Amino acid sequence: MKHALCTRCRFDNKELMDRYLVVSRDMLIPSLRAQTNKDFEWIVMVKKGDEDYIMDFLDMEFTPVYDNHDFIELLKTKEFVIQTRHDIDDWMAPKYIDEIQRVYKENINRKDKFLIQAQPIKLMYKTGEEIVMGRYHSLRTSMFLTLCQHKIDNYITEKKHGHMWKIAPDVYSVPDGLVKWVIHGNNIS
Image (cartoon, rainbow, N blue to C red; front, top):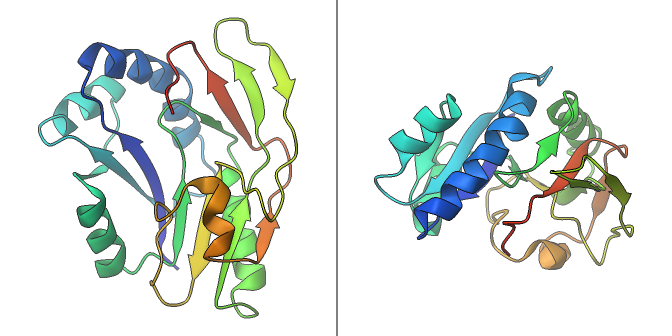
C-alpha cells in the first residue's frame, strides 16, 4: 500500500508563511518525526523556489509539488491508494498514520473507495487551551481526512473537505484524540 500525506504550504506573503512555518516547526514536525509508522511519503504543495527554504526552515525533507496538476500526476504515477490531507500548522498523535492504515486494511477489501476522518480538538497555540469541537459525520467530513481507493480516480484535494463524501460516501473514523486543529492567530482559510 502506498500512502501520501498531503500538505499545502503556498503563500504569496512570505512573512505570513514564516509565521505558519514557526507553528509547523513546533507542532507538525515533531508529530511527523514521532510517527510509529513511517510508511508514508510527505508531499508538500509549495510555490516554485520556496521548497529549499521551507525544508531548511523545518529541517525536514518532503517531496515538493507546485500546483494541483503536479500533485495529481504524482499521485497517479506513484499509485498512492491512501491520500491523507493534513495542514502545515496542525498536530497529529504518534499513532495517527498507524490508525489510518489500520482502518484502510479493515475496509479495502469491502469497498472500492472510502474516506477515513479524524475528529479534531481545537488547540489554542498561545495558551494551550483545548476546546471540544462539534462532531463531524458522513455528510460533513472533517478537515483531517483520508481518501482510500483501489483505482486512483479521485484526489484528496478534489473538493473542499466537507464535501468529499460526494466522491466517496462511505466514511469511517479513527479514534478521537489523534489530531489537533491549531489556532495561532494567523490562520487563513
